[in-house]
Length: 372
Image (tube, rainbow, N blue to C red):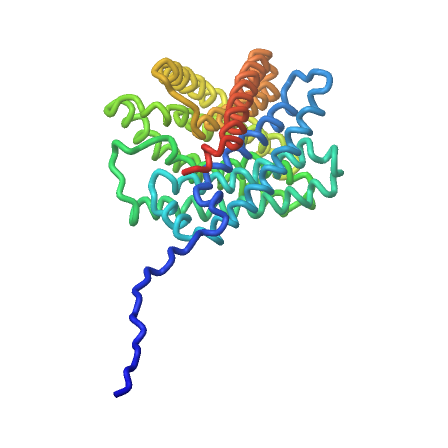
């Protein structure tokens, strides 16, 4: 009888699929804050009431750095979505991470605005207008989409409680205000008449979108602090995010008032110029009050052992918007006090940027920041 040899079956466990580009897996949208903080440093420094020799050249270099950072991060984030879609979707469904998707719009807008403020010295006015037009358009569209999509996710998908309220919730709501503040840079390059008036009023509309949405969110944030006590140490710097819509709205009304005479009928232009001061001064006062509170909480956290986290970048862009807001008020009121305030805030911004940038670079070199 013939014997048939039967090869025994072996049960093997399917190999776990290895992720490509593992270094990008934990690269979240919060990294765009590095671009925002770097761009606002250049923009604020170039428009300060007081200018030192070589200051504009330094701002040009900082703007160039922000443009490079934006290009690198856009590429890296595209790789994140390409190779780690599961993680990208998880970020969108995570109420602690999803609001940071608003940073993409602000990064595009800040670098675009800097292109017209200081980048034109390096690439020419024509090229600067073209670059800013593209970045402003894309950034504004993304910002408006995020201003609707992310609150929608918070309502229908995220499971949040009042005790989880932080200033991070403001991030999707601020981009339209950034568009309102930087749109005026493009208005003089549009044909006179309806094109200029259309963009002017569109910027005021976006100002209203962001302002009213922010006013609806601030009571939740302040109420959580009063009832729930201090934030965890690593989240304490996010308190400075409240300064973003305050400083940016002050900047917006002043920037819009500058271009109103060449965009709209004279009576309205005069009213908008008055509105820049009537609105800007009280809001800047509240911004300084919040700055004092947030600084006191930051000192408390530092004494409690707060270490470096990417939340430190919250100390840059929001403070930078207060610099540009104070600069605008100095221009429209003629008060030296606002010029001094802008300078003092800029020195604080520069210090915060140097600290955040140095620690971020160290964390990248060690691999800690991308280790998840």
